[in-house]
Amino acid sequence: MSRSHGLTIGEVAARTGLAPSAIRHYEALGLVHPLRNAGNQRRYDRADIRRLSFVMAAQRLGFPLADIRAALADLPDGRPPTKADWGRIATRFRRDIDARIAALELLRDRLDGCIGCGCLSLETCALHNPADRAGAEGPGPRYLDPI
Image (cartoon, rainbow, N blue to C red; front, side):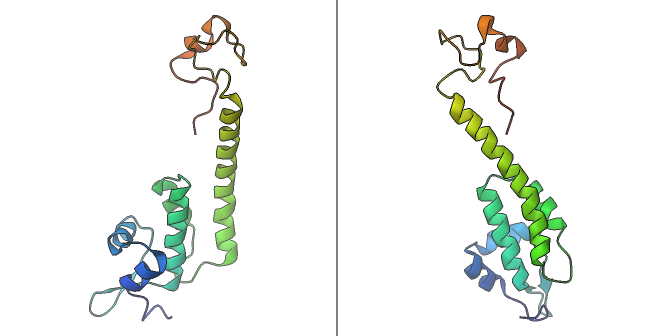
């Protein structure tokens, strides 16, 4: 479908499962850029369906909207994104996902021992925290990187 005719917000909502209000919200955030027809109605490109689907998937993975917006800002204006365009975004997000997986695996592997909280409730600590050295570094878990 050409950009001049485009898809209505209802058609995009039906394809993505998003409410029209959510689509308008994402537009206000600059995640999609519909054109307006002579009657001032929004008209979306088919590529906007993919952009919105990416937003939904990235949000489910815990990415903040600011990161999603930054990634989508790299997509070209005036033409649908190519597979290579999406590949660049995927590479960047894959690195972040891999780091999250590594942090979760570390947490999983340390859950039955001390996670560096300085609680002194275990007689033996898998991380060897005698004299609550971790507690001297401040409150909360000290040996896990923030996610």
